[in-house]
Amino acid sequence: LFYIHRYFMHYGFQMWRYWHYGFKEAMQGVVENQDNYSLVFVNNTYEPSLLHYLFYSKYRPADFQAKFISDAPMEGAYLGFTGFRFGDKIYFGQSDNLLEFLQPGMLYLAVQGKEIPGDWDWGKNPPQGMKTIKQVKTPKGDLIFTLVAKE
Image (cartoon, rainbow, N blue to C red; front, side, top):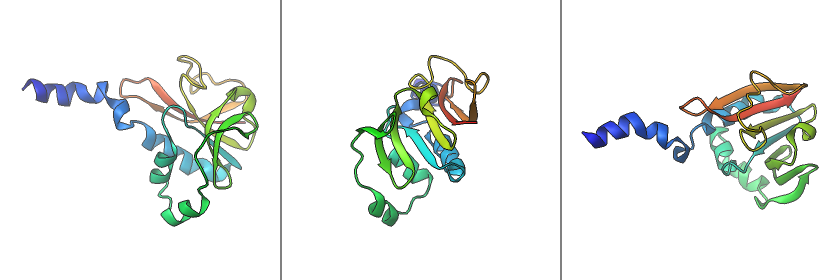
């Protein structure tokens, strides 16, 4: 009984990160909005994000094989962004300074605590000129991902 209680009542709240919690909602947000932007950037430092993007976007394996070059991070993959490019307009990695980096026409999936400091909720109080498109929270209600663009 102890095991069943722990599994059904506590396990999901304690081990959510090991089950890649939040990636489905975050990547679906990217896929739903990517056609509205000329460039798309996805934080890749929280956890490798390329596989999650491919899975939730239902990316065709043949297209992946044709477009994929490398996932080795390169300094300056895009000016102010360290990571790698996938296809024509999608980048995976991390911005050195998100507030200065993001320009109109760019979509960015930011990670709380990496690009967004502390517990600053950009959904309630975004920086000037920023638009929050979607937020993903843990089972406890803490922010993990914020999908943003510059207005």
